[in-house]
Length: 381
Image (cartoon, rainbow, N blue to C red; front, top):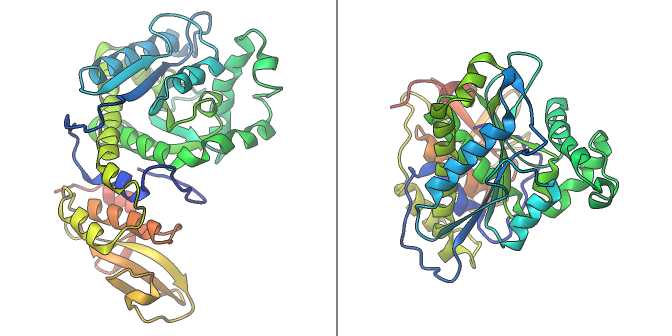
């Protein structure tokens, strides 16, 4: 999973550390939910509908494929205890973008998941999952503009969107403000879904990205927009139009939601205490499912400096297991050392909670630094 962010936002209710355990726990759902007052509400949004067909790559209709996938996701989730599913549409009906978010807000939803299919002038393929944010590149901007142009099909769109112009990059700047407090949770959910696409369905990973989608801006809870693949790609379009493809994609999305919900439950006991202790991190690491890469070593890079520091915990905000290497004229400071990728992910999150917001994972083999993405493609044990 590739996530590029310039800063790490603070979450509103759930400690970032606890939510990130999701990357280190195999999928399962616990029915022992102590909160009986309110179910876990998931709003599922099938993109487009009615007179808005979405993209028509290879003659397929995005609106129909998105709806089929959403209905299958809902069918899976509805079988689980204490989960309530709400659909923005269950038929071939056009729903205004601002109303889709409003449906989720009125329901006091815990999650908002919008499902779409991609298109491109080339044979591009693969899945990508978006959270609300400023476009990181021109491609992200174009995807968002394409989806947002649906507002022109709505009556009174100028009144509903207060002069928003989907063709203006400046219009994207204000979209992130209402969602900032939910951004980390949104990224966690997006990462879970994208990880399932990549590792379980073996779809090409186009990563988790940020872009300015109106439909995400309208919802006041963790929200993601899933681009399930490209209808314009000959093979992928046929896959998405098939019952098999729709069932598999829906299963991956549902599993991501359920894993997110499970880890939300795990966060309950910590929610009022955002301070993470070394004892907690050690206990969490001991209970994670291993994802071992024999012969490789993962570390969390905390900082690079010309200053040589003693690696004692008090110099690194209490973090233990600090090592120091001199590389390219600088001292590089690393936290942790393991061949277990799940463990190092958890340690990275712990380091972020301690204040190292820009830390990241690095990989080594025989003392040589490698690209983590290349290591993750190797055979897993």
